[in-house]
Image 1 (cartoon, helix red, strand yellow):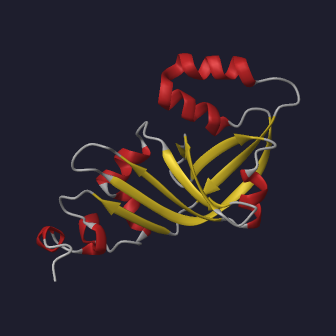
Image 2 (cartoon, rainbow, N blue to C red):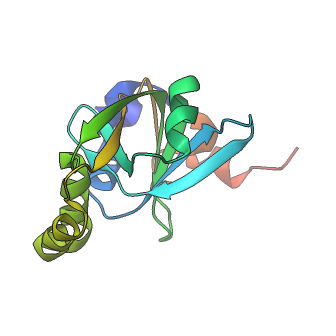
Length: 166
């Protein structure tokens, strides 16, 4: 039962909130350290393969050398509904160069916008000499917040209601 797992346990990827968000069209927010040493947060489409959360970008993007130099990242995928649902991921990414359009880039476009968007993106981007980067995260830390059974700090609903009180 995933509701009893502590924050950080990778088995939380099987929690219903995690599965829902990994299949959703919510943008992920990828946090990393840029080449100048300052933090960045990037809203980005993603594709979940079942093992990896994959982000794709075009060759030449500044985040590529930064992620190769400092591959530790944090990711959040969340809703704005009340109560919010939040999936928190941490780990190291692997950046792989791809000749042509990365399959996960097209898969993400299909999930976010359907087959027509995927086809339009393929037609618009697939050209000789195209290079992309595949940024893959295998989470080593997973957190889930649903504000019904799982709260920040790992406490109960009563603990959360008393937050900020001495």
